[in-house]
Image (cartoon, rainbow, N blue to C red; front, side, top):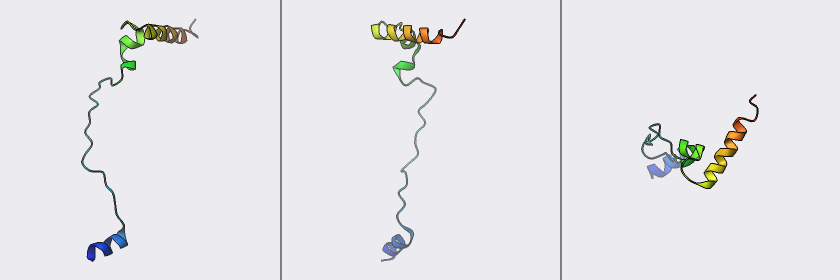
Length: 63
């Protein structure tokens, strides 16, 4: 009965179990951020097209 009384008085606290592992290590997680995909060098036609658009957008206001 003591546990029940303490729950009534304090409530229930749901805590996160365990520590979260740090797995970053400076690695690129998505293919879209890799240099080959940004430059369109990996062979995909859509990636080449996107690279062309990125290049146009980057050069838009340069003189």
